[in-house]
Image 1 (cartoon, helix red, strand yellow):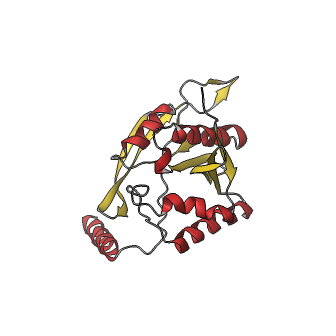
Image 2: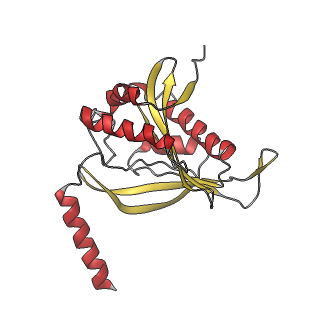
Length: 215
């Protein structure tokens, strides 16, 4: 028997406790520069995500993902450029719901929202190359590997390499991808919810100094 589908719902502040059920867990944020969150950090994050729906123009469309009545994750469509029709998707799944196809359903819903509702031409995302679960989700979404970025975020065990990029056709006529047109779909949500570690600041200063010297 098939289970009920995962559905996306516009995030509201009262969702913060459900979000904190994973945001406070080390396994959920292993590959992220934030967390584990305190309750205050999660409340601030959810408050900002909910308030973003009131901004003009819209830039950040955050949703909670529900499986029945249970909140099992979160997905965000970032409208990076309305003029150039560029977007980005990010998602997270509660560890208790891993391995159930939740991430794939969140991703499909976000891509449909971006392409069908907002008429985007290109959608990208990134993930830590070590995060094989997230990489598999991107593959299931029909993305093609594009590249690898070095040292894009500081996390607990040092600098994290930036995501992998995945690409496939975006523009469609009668539901069929146009040949030669590509878009990227990838995953990232790299906004630290706390202060940047001193080690990261020092490393950034060193990197900046080295770059200037190289010029």
